[in-house]
Length: 80
Image (cartoon, rainbow, N blue to C red):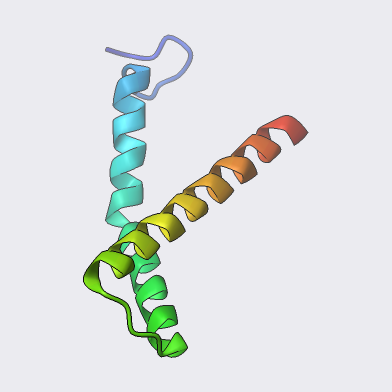
């Protein structure tokens, strides 16, 4: 299907666009990068944690990163 407003093919639905953008983010290995930063930071702290404590701490840090990212996105959209 052709885009009536240009010569580029129709990019499809919002869901398809979201899927492609998410795949691009995944291919950038951002999740792996976040985990590696947390792992290195924890090693630098030289703290011994049980597996459960480490898992809980990782989850909490990822949640904080997600909340921070969401806030930045909201701030960017408000300022536009």
